Image (cartoon, rainbow, N blue to C red; front, side, top):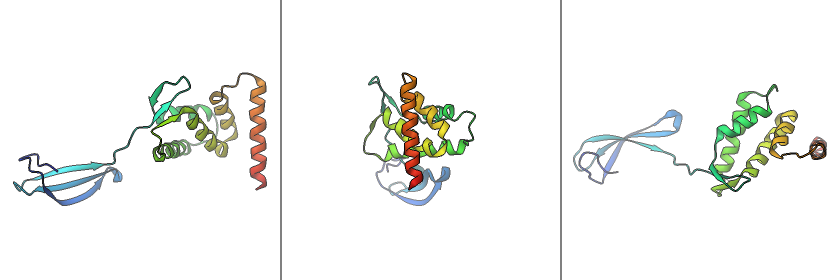
Length: 157
């Protein structure tokens, strides 16, 4: 770490402590050249995830956009905000932990549907109707039938 006073390249850490609920580390350093002390902060660098949309355009992942979609699907349903925040956190963590820096929007939709399936059936169907862009009542009924079949299989296990 370069000293801000004399630009010497070496310093020693005198004190380290976490700040911002463990999101950053504050370090007090002493320059080995001039002896002056200074503070540095260490943070985790995250690589942004880029979403490839249906029209092939790209945009940075926006957790608020996902949360708003989930909120609309759960409108007037007994699903807490904490539950939805956890869903968004889980999806964001899954995306960050994948090796892909670009992900299709369909993957995010699929992950959201998987989470909603276990939280609220009505919210699942609402989200699926927007996400899967049903063209007619037949495609909507196919989705309901598939959902019911999967639910029955899970209940048998």
